[in-house]
Image (cartoon, rainbow, N blue to C red; front, side, top):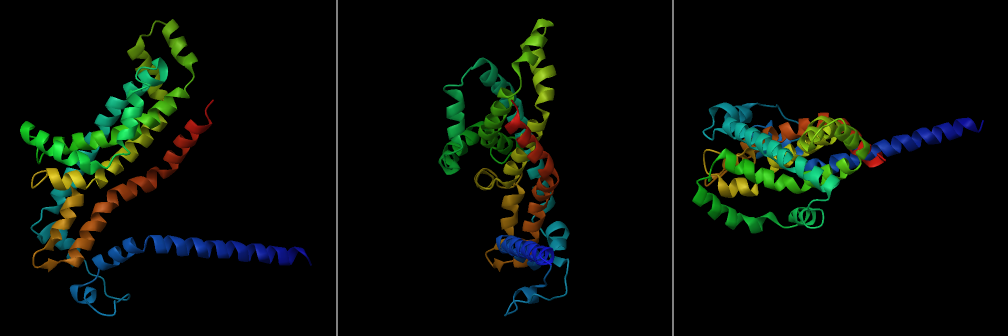
Length: 281
């Protein structure tokens, strides 16, 4: 007689928690949901007042963005893929050996690591003018490699911090055993530290790619035509004649799909790698 009311209360409590969770998720993602719905509305439905929540979906805006439009949006997506990929690989290539030197040999641990880490705390806008004039003199304006270098610089602080923390938790006995077998520093780094660091390297790669993909400021300042990233290209549907709300919404949805899908599928592995680094030792 007592167990049944308790079981009922537990079910009601679980149901209430799900209701609150769904409501919170809906409210927090309301702008994304609204943009998603707008991308499938006709122009008449978008301009209707009061707003229509029930409508006949159309793909006209996606066709305009990808095929019939004159903004070359597919090339903007490709630019972002190249920029984010190259920026991520460069950041890992630079920070991995640096993290090993800091974690194992304390090289630069008292000055390099704090300086690089504090760069993340500075607003990026203060670097805009110096980078613009430097890129102008080097001929890197409106180039993919130029924006990839920016993405690399932006990702270095986070990548270095994460890699240093993880490598510090790798037992030094592995290094000593490899050294006794005749391995030099680069062989230890390649055959011992690299395989042990694969989980955190995967996490750094995913986060760096997403941050590089979402970069807007330098893409707006340093590109005009050939290297325009998708974040900047989505704004080209705001014209002097008005805002193409449907096309803009479609461009935004297409722009967030790659990092959204990567984050969704990589989330379980990121959680495991971060937890592994936290409980080691």
